[in-house]
Figure 1 (cartoon, rainbow, N blue to C red):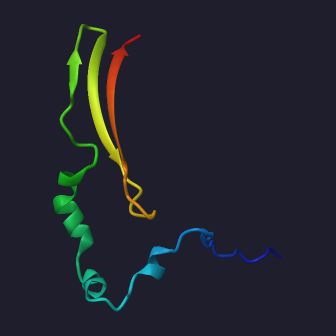
Figure 2 (figure 1 turned 45 degrees about the vertical axis):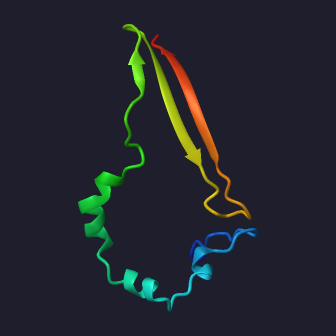
Figure 3 (figure 1 turned 60 degrees about the vertical axis):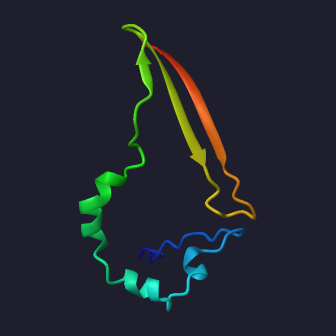
Length: 97
């Protein structure tokens, strides 16, 4: 006889509260969110909010090389006491082999 399969329970993080424990499930917006058809909203509008969209900042130097510029922002998602974040700028030089 095989042992019964135990349901997988995600391991709790000792240093973070679970989101479900931070939210008030009786709040009006939580109740409203249960009545929204999120799948149809995603189908209708999801393609417009893709995080990889943006204008390429690349200049082709010749057939095998190009130079590019990129910028970004990294946030701590308001998990810490302060949310300073970090801005980054990159200058890329790429050569094809």
